[in-house]
Length: 84
Image: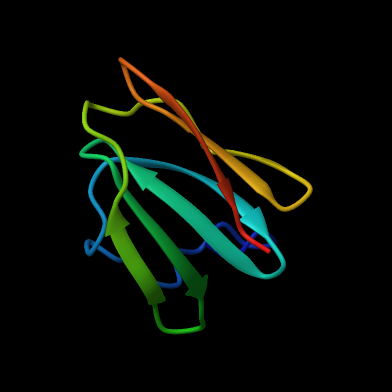
């Protein structure tokens, strides 16, 4: 979305319902089916660099990044992932 005009620039249906956090020009995306993805938004769409199943239950909590540690949570567990 163009923040100046409100116009939709592109839409990407490659990721389901998800929460995300932005860092270093990339998006860290955790979908409700526990798939973690690292992607870069571009002018024509979303470029997914990596995707992996990381948890076991449904996830609705946004990933939290503190320094280089990413914290993820589903309904049963919490996980810390070092991204360095």
